Image (cartoon, rainbow, N blue to C red; front, side):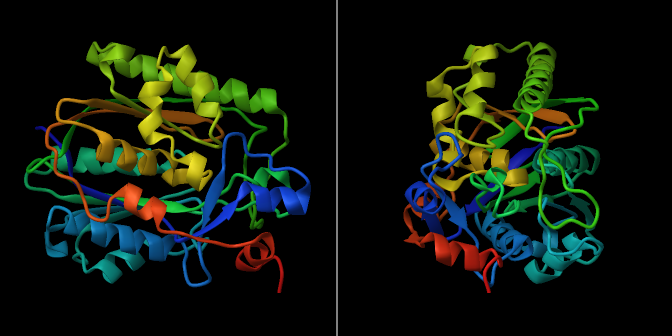
Amino acid sequence: MTAGISGYNSYVPRLRIKKEDYAKAWGSFQAAGVSEKAVMSFDEDALTAASRVSKRALESVPMAPAKVTRFAFASTTAPYLEKLLSGTVLVNVGMPNSAFTTDHTTSTRAGTEALVSGIEHVKASPGGVAVVATADAPRASMWDPLEHPMGAGAAGFVLSSENLIAEVEGYASFAMEHFGERFKPAGEGTLQDLNVKKFFASAFTTCTTKACASLLKKLGTKPEDYAHVVIQQPDAKTPGSVAGKLMFNDAQMASGLVSVNLGDLGAASTTVGLVAALDAAKVGDRIIMISYGSGAGSDAVSLKVVSDRKPVPSFKDQLEKKEYIDYIQYVKLKGALK
């Protein structure tokens, strides 16, 4: 059964902070290639963003929430350590209580994990409809340079076998054990990193290249077959190092490189990038997205655009609607300054 994306949209927080304001406070801004990043306000979190983007995705079809049979929520920064998070969003949006729900957490790979689970539901359930919401705002200590690139954003998708915008051609994964990079111990509220850059670079490159190579072999496609390429974006430079090894070029990366203006979106990094790529794509274009999660693992997903239907508001419209804050306001919003 053919399955794919019937509707989609993103949510970009209105508040932004420029790299210059970080530099004024810190003397530097350690987020390669990031010019500014999005910030959630006092009344926003991963659950409110997921609810908003799920509604927008359904409206883009359009489709009534009552038709949803599967809902998957993905985030690394949900406001509860133990609680059914997907149920909160499901009720807020008006999806049926009988819809099968899952929470995907603990890894920035969670966004593609949720997307693949939704696709598998549609393929296994004739007439099934899945909604996938990925929303994140990664957190590290305000005294740790690891925090500098961390932004906020969300993406939502309606997955089905009918009225498709893009069909999913296939997916592949690669996982291994790799300690030492970004992690959050039990009982801690912020991310940590042993700051051994070779650890991260080695794991990131190994996982993403192997997942991508496996998918290309499976589908019989080549790098040049893809008009748009979206790779996990801990900053705006790291994806390019992997793209070069996979023989993708800057032009293929351009549409989905959202970290330049939004920062590191964690579990929503590749999915928000996918929204931007879909907005830019033409019928017949192929898109490949490659996620990464420390620990370590990667998913690669190939899609082919079959319709030119675009959502409102567009990703570009949301990107341009913004209000800048300074570093003191930012620290207050992060709860580090009372």
